[in-house]
Structures are given as structure tokens and as C-alpha cells.
Image (cartoon, rainbow, N blue to C red; front, top):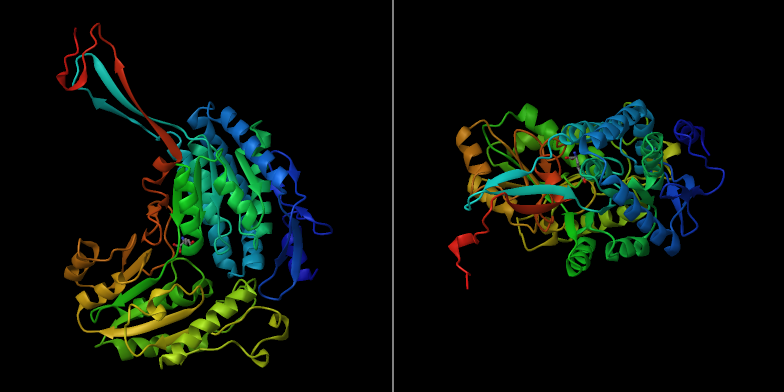
Length: 519
Ligand code: UN1
């Protein structure tokens, strides 16, 4: 192992001499499929992680059920205290975990650390929430009656997370699910298994110290078949899935057919719109971060840019300047802003999007190809490097995959408009509906944008880019993004089973609506 990698893994006590166990249900095991964790920056194999065999998976689900039966009776504020300790344990390893995310996923260090911070933040939030998960008392129409709406723990919540946020998205789900009194079972992306092992070690040490069954936060590393078995299991009461629209459609069908709860966070195809009155010195760097930050691999990355014709040339020249200065580098190095794509396969996805653009005579303003090895420092030769791209297609054809498809890579498509209404129509004219952003200082534009005829995305920003949401509000998208909401806002209400309890305190037993059923 390189010294670069062993320093990061060593700081988190991840032993790499032999296969790393990838299953935790109170004890560590793993005798199923073996997954290589490959560093996207160098191509180095970091470790081999052994996932769940079918028997181990069923045992883990069984352990989760037992853990739920115990945990549901622990008072919610006591559960909040466990979350507070998890928060402290994560914060103590913030830099180490951030570096591991950077090493294994490929995002730059400040974003890796930011992701751990996102987990810390939601743990704070859920600690408070544990004293505020209030039900309601509803006025009854009958004398001496009360109606209560009671949030009860739900059961086993399965979290299937994606490679691009290998820690934070699990954190959003675990924190709310744990506050709600559930057992959570995590099936992470098989390409970021070390992040999930490291996080589970930290969380489980807190659980064990408090004599809480470890399976309250279980882990099953695995591939497609493990994912399918989790989604199909009748012992799983809610499935929270983050990933592609295609897989999400399958997950949705299965979960729906067995009437379990479902939370989907699928594709984003997010647009920024820049009006002529916008402050370009704020808008340009924000679009730059949205489009090339995380190498274009956030669900919230900016993929479409609609520029008012009056400012389009000035805006594009600012943006091109920033693109031209961007240098690929090791994401662990503090000065790097642009890291690799996560997998080899992603290079193919990038290249076919570029080919599609070229075939349609789009103008390529920046990038449009992979790096030649002569353009890269030798230690990066084994990594997955593509040039961040700005393209101007010949027209906005919303039926074409150029505008419709989510390409998980740093490819930005640009078009110009003259009326805001036109730009909003383009913003809304795609299947996905995750994030959107308008740049303007005119309050009338803001009113249009956030109102009934405005953006139909779940996230509707003003003078803020498409990516980088805080945890306090609900996070999620509409339409083919799946309508799920995670993190803050009302999201916690999905992780409970609601009981509507009509209680009669009186000596009579009248029927509702005045129905008379006396013989
Ligand atoms: C994702 O890309 O899956 O708003 C989640 C953001 C982050 C979360 C993105 N806080 O970009």
C-alpha cells in the first residue's frame, strides 16, 4: 500500500493485510462476495472488503428486527443522547474520515470533511428532534372524546446509498431513523465499502458503550443481489434508496408491491438561470462550483445553464477563465479543486455524452476530452481523469438526451434566452426535478420563480447555486427524482408509523357523524 493510502487508513484503524469484514450486526463478519476498494485518483487497490453471504444477510435482517424490538422501548430523549454521543465520536474523527472519503470516493478534501460535518449537523438536529417528535391532539366532535395522532417507531429501515455521498446520505437517514426508534440496516455502494466500515465502527462503538444492540445500526456490504434481497425482505419496513432513475424504478416497484414505505432520491438534471440584472461576480463562481465541484458527481450538480442574451458573452468569458485555470490534482492535496471521476466506467459515460454533443454539432467551449497522460503528473496516471466541459448545443431540444439525460460527470450545457418565462419552461421541461437556481436582484423575478408558475424542482434557490444544501430543510426532488424528502423539514415523519387513537373518556358511546344504531 502507498504511504499516501496507509496514512489515511491507519488513522482509522482499518486493517488491510487481509479481507476487511463488511458485515456488522452486533458482531463483524463477511464471507460473501469480495469487493475491491479502488482509489479513483491513482487506480491503487486500497483494500478488499468481504460482503454478506445470503445467510449472513438474512441473519443481519433478523438481528435488526430483534434490535428494533429492544430499541423501540428506549425513550426518545434517551435515543437522542445516543445520537449526541455519535455526533461527538464523528466530530473527533472529522478530518480522518474526511480524508478517507477523499481517498476512496475521489472528492476533494474540504468536501470530504464537509460531508462528515453534514453527518455531525444532522446528528445535532436529530438530538434536538428526539425531544420534539410531537404528535397532535385533535378536537373530537363527540363529548368526552379525544383524538391523538401518535408517532410510533416503524421497524427496520434499510438505507441503500450511492458512491457520491458515501457518508452524509447514510447520516441523514440514520439520525432520523435512530431518533424515531428504529433499527437501520445500511447497504452502501460496493465501490465505497471502506467509508461504510469506518463509519459503522464509530457508530457501533457508541452503541456498545451504551449497551444498545449493535444491530440498531447494521451494515451489509454487497452487490446487486444483496441490494435486491434487502429491498424484497418482508422484514424491512422502509427502504430509503439513493441512486439512478433506472434502479429506483425497480426498487419502487418491489417496495410498492409489498406495501412497505419508500423514500427515493434519484437523478438530478439541475439548471441555473442567470438574468441580466444578476451580480455576475457572485453567479459565475457559483455556477463554476455547481458544475465542476465534486467533478460533477453530485445529484445536485449544475448540468444546464440558461443565460440571458444580454449577459451571455460576458458570463461565458468569466466562466471559461475559471475552467481554463482548473488543474486536475490529488484530491487529498489541500490546493486541489478538481479530482477524478469515481470509476473507470464513468469515463465511458462522460465520453458518450461528449460524442452525443459532437454528433449534434454542439460547440465545445472547454474540455470535451479525457486528459492525455502527458497532461497529468505521473502519480495520477492510474486515475479516472476527464476534462470539465462547457458545450453550447445548437438548440434547446428537450426531447434530446443532451438536455434530458443526467450525465454524472462535469459536462455543462449552455443556451441563451430573452424572457424568464422561456428559461423556466426549459428548466421544467425535463423528467427530473431535484435542484434549480435563479440569479437575479429583481424581486419580481423571484416571485415568478418560487411561485405556482415557477421552478417545479424540489430545491428552488435564488442567488444560491444548485448544490450544497444545508441539513435543516427537507432535501429532495420531484418528478423522476422520486418525490423523496430527507434530512430536515418534515422528513422525520416518514420514519415513524402514525397511530390515530380515538379515546372515549365518557360514560356514553356515541357514533361519529351522529349515526344512530340503537335497536
Ligand atoms: C447528493 O448529491 O446525493 O446539496 C446529495 C448538496 C449536498 C447533498 C447532495 N448537501 O449538494
